Length: 108
Image 1 (spheres, rainbow, N blue to C red):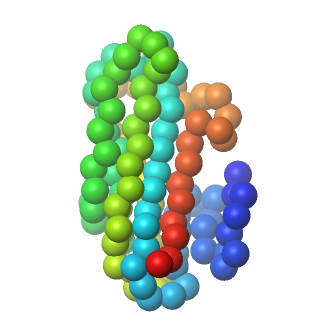
Image 2: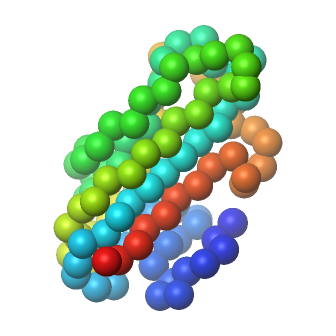
């Protein structure tokens, strides 16, 4: 669900952000995973043009679940592709609706 995208830079079908202007951006992402579906640590990474930029780590817990989130300030060029990937040693459940995931990109 896209709630606020003034420049139409986020594509929800591919889950990618492509800035229309050069500049310094704050990129943030977060994920909540049901506590019953995670038994190993997991990581989430911000990628720019397919290259890993920042790892964000989460440890499993019984309650209230596993939350992975973080931000990085990066210089982007118009047309760069930003996406978020998740790494985990086994299957995870990503249920619960759009309120369990977020991605933001802001130009300074």
